[in-house]
Image (cartoon, rainbow, N blue to C red; front, side, top):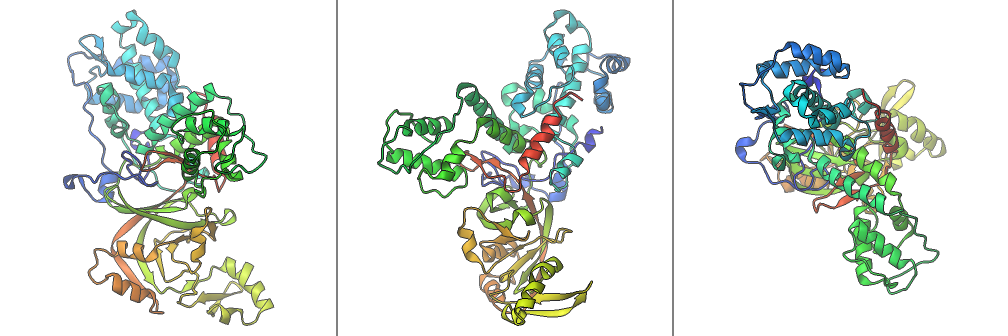
Length: 540
């Protein structure tokens, strides 16, 4: 397994929050900026132990791999690592193990804290070697630590391989990273070894903190369902109110736990906070849907956190460019400039039977007053049956036949306010025939759940998005954009610089206020992912 083929994939650097999910990051200094392509190929130079006097014989590596064959898949990387160091010890100085070795061993021996089900190979041997005074005089602990580092980098920073992520419906390309250069993140001073130094999406570390909290909750509380047989409104009293207060207190939505049976204003505020974190209508009422989310078993929430930590392993550390991110379960589009969130808006995504594909693209064109070339599948399933019932269907929907293909008419809808694509669309050529566009059905953006489309993504603020994409083009200001949207004549505008767009799927994430959010698994992808992670539970 070449470490240059260990993959991480594309997306955003989330500082004290996130990017894709609304957490803003301070802009990077200008001298650090680079083109997206070049930035993705960079690696962080390591500054691990630089002592050169204490070395070992390279033949020791042969003996090591013979004794611990489960590390053979990492042999090429380990040999290359030591060859570059002239076989100098990396974890020992002056005959003593450096303090940073403990940081690595602790994380290897506690992989459950990384959201990983399986155990590292020879973890018991690692523990014994590090605590056996006699072993310190041999090269074995040194080689064991380095081998375990590469195991850790694969499990915690790479995650499942390409085939498995694609089987989970994730078609974003995965970025190449040389994990040898990241040894620095584990063997520097432990208090300096922040997640930002690791080759992993910032969201990973934020979710990991909540994973610990939810495991502690699960150990202390049986989380029995709370049932309300009747509506309980603000000002009412109920024997179930203390249970609800206690639960919201443990979840961090209520500031203090009380035994009062009264549905107070403070409780209503806490319920509203809980609803916002779960993508519900924030009315502050104990609705059936709100109670259902409050009663989700902690075991399920823990699995949800682990699944989304795994997805975070597939994303890049940062991206110095303008880019867009769509999080399907959140029904949101987020717009960024150099990892700083500029604004967000609601979107409508594909229905369960017409799922929006998870992939990466680059917006190349803004198309004003577009035609809609009706997909042949819609012509077959919807338009032809409608024509049999109503011969004026095409005229009433401002459609026209322009030809035929494979025995079906080729149909397009004329530009205008009734066009299904609205007044503007944003094209990023892809094999899935998915793009962003306006819509005449504005009311759908007010719905809490917004999975209504045939797969494309409808944008609530298309004019604002067009302005963002054309902001560096002096020929296009807000007046000209508005005029082109209502011209009734299709016009393509080619962007000077293509803008990356990432269509992803996170059902658990940390928002810009550092609050944990959960969303419905609308495409039922989490269970399959959890099953994949559980299937990896045995050491390789």
